[in-house]
Length: 217
Image 1: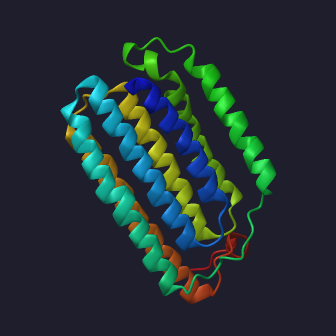
Image 2: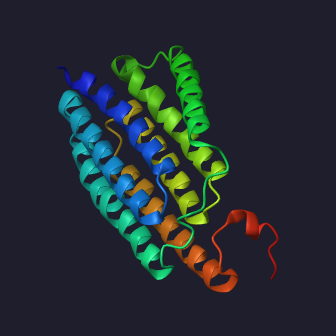
């Protein structure tokens, strides 16, 4: 099996794990699944580093493991303890089978789009590139489809993982500073959103986005 084939296979696994994040109930199991997905992303970085001889991607992998696989899930798990896993029974606005249909359409559209790409670095990894773009769209779907505002945080995380992978596929030799900026923005944003969710729960005693449509100062 070539390194590029492994990258494409792991890319497919990203879609599977993202759907698991969408489907599971409760913040804690979703955080664990997101941590596992981030480990898959780290594996893609390592495989890309091996086939492109990119030392930068090795540093990307280390930074992504710390921030995405450890810190971000840890923040969400801590939040779930603080709010006593409230909102875990909230069903998404869209049924599970329909979410799979939406994800399949998003992947199909992105596969069609990347066929027009004529970037040398992307020729061998077009399936993974399509998945990275679809991953961003799946993150947006998560934000729109979830009633639980904590689960909506994962929509942002999925979008960020998708954009991170897109950058790695198109620019594997980008400076480590670029990756550090992306990862730092991600977990700082998660901290801010987690604090906001905690404050909302303490004031409104609900995490249902539909109950929070009217905000009062």
